[in-house]
Figure 1 (cartoon, rainbow, N blue to C red):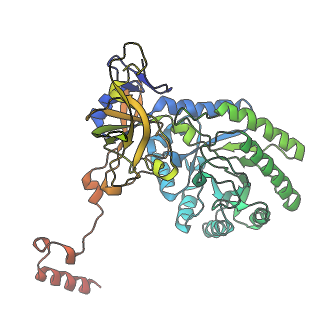
Figure 2: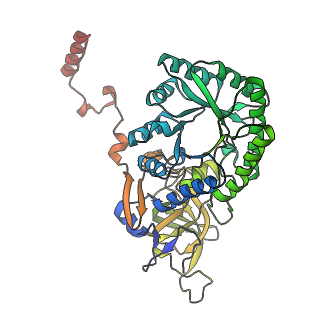
Length: 470
């Protein structure tokens, strides 16, 4: 019997965890650990759920993948194949999408602090929409578009003043936020008026985002009410007709047994009629409905595999299971106090401790990362068969904001990412090597060991040649 209840967990005849038809232990041996594993079918199912559930309830819907959750070429192409547009929030994410072959006219460019260089790049490739976060940004887009003889399509990101019940660091809808243009103090209305007067931007719609890992529908409905009230006010004051309303993303996922997320269907059933009703009440035309799921597209599709390096049992205190990864490949625990579930991938079929015939001893352990930080913990207090050195440990629901936020802290190379489906595994990001870590390091000559320094005569020759070339 599988000792962990999870829709993505199953055991094969060897008692090993399987993901996308692949033996997780075999994946760990073949590709090494730590290893990010993404279940392709799980990603596709999540995409289709949004497209189908909202499409069945609202006449004009656009689902946009919030790529910051996991932005690599293969994932960008996969979600677009399922009919989603892309949301990028940096020049790097935009470059990744363009270099993968994603059409620029299906890309929304977000970000609260876009540089002039990023804006110019986005204009040059022809992104579909800029989601504008401030008046300063609006002016820069207009100026750069004018210099290129273009008209940029823009949406204004507004802060609706709604606080979702989530971690403080991932709340974004409240007035005191680095994101968006504030509605209550009149800034948003002023921004609409300015956007309508600028010759090289065209204001197509409004955007809001209330936060991440949200488990309630009410804040989304409240946000629609606020945004439609504002759209009516802006129409009366400036003549602006909102073509598009983007309600952002933020649906939570099930990281552990305490989480009870709402589904795409739940959200569609709440949001679609609320928007239809609000448009009717205010006498406004129905806008296109845009939404930006990210975590709920890839989060539960991901599993990270580790190898157990050591088991430290402190009698009467705690058992630490140390693995070969940690906060360098998953900083969310340290940043947000995120909670995960874990299991031994090579012993998934072990009967639970209370199961009849159970002969293997179990214990409650905490999974410790390998970074030189006391705060580098991956999972606290999880029950599993007594772990041993060499076991393959799986941490579930790591598809979102794990690879995206990975670092080289302590000079650990970032893991590989593999995409699995129907028993096939394809590398979509190669594992970094030690050589990759130092490839961009540069040591001044004065710091080099004497044996490796160029001779004084050679240095003098270089200086002379450089002076002549100038």
